[in-house]
Image 1 (tube, protein in one colour):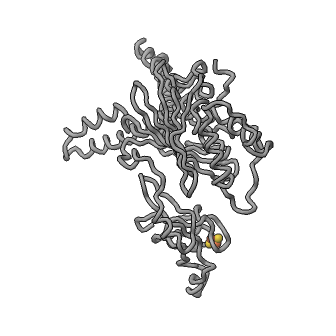
Image 2 (tube, rainbow, N blue to C red; image 1 turned 90 degrees about the horizontal axis):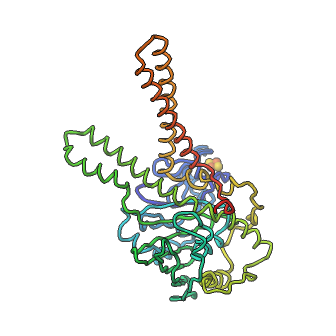
Length: 431
Ligand code: FES
């Protein structure tokens, strides 16, 4: 609103309808139910049904507002609406990796919702030792790489408002015989950085793990991509310069192609990441259910140093952090076990619905499928007409060739389309 980011509670003061269902009007947010409007400070600016305009002035007509900051291309919200919140938030800096501060040009974000909670997701992302087993068959991961991973604590500051715990894991990954050492760092309450160093170079990526509700979490994962739109886009950009200012149409065409290639490259990267998180879906959901039966993590048996960071994280979570996220009173406890695999792993609901790049590619794929089907019909029609009219044999052959190519394309589009929905991950089938 008004060129700035504001954040207000998602609950209208009138009859508690969610304001997120509304719209921005004249710089205010307007509730979609009866049209009450609020400014960025949460003050009510209009009650269409009230003849007396002073009705807006009552504090009961306001909604809670929370301070925001923009940093590293993201909007950060300070979850406090008290009178000192703006001042307090200005003194606190969000935990951001320096790579994000330097440049956002090659940064790709992957966002996904999960049907399990914050603690399990944190624990999994703090622990590289599970990868050879959980991710067997994805990329270069292999169960045979499951060997001791000596880990050393390099930083452990758990007192005060901001905790930092860092662990060096020797040979955390061993792709094709070239081991990578990893430094995994936890910044409280929800930020993790992985820093890998190996003979093939240096790779860094980071994650924010957001508690959404009991048994629900959201991951924001960033990594640095080699090029935003891949080699095809780089070639297109090189082409763009000679077009000159007079070739506006071509410029527009190239701009549209740029958008396509960026979406395509992002979608490809997200397709690579999907199975990584699907591989842990059943494990983490089941672990959380088992844990709720057991009562706490106290019974975990972690005899090797590979679990060092997980041990330290739980010590912080159960000690300094008071046990975990605080939920509003009367929030339901953990949801019942999810027995529907699709609900557990659906890419469509957990990622695609929130990812503009994947949505673009899903729509493009739909158009391609339609065009391929049209190609099949046209080819068949042309072949039939050619036979009936006694046309030359090669016309009929060309029409049948079109049918074949279009049919193959249609099948490939149908297969690709499935990748945007539910793809099961069964460990026992990965040999
Ligand atoms: S509930 Fe929002 S205006 Fe009525």
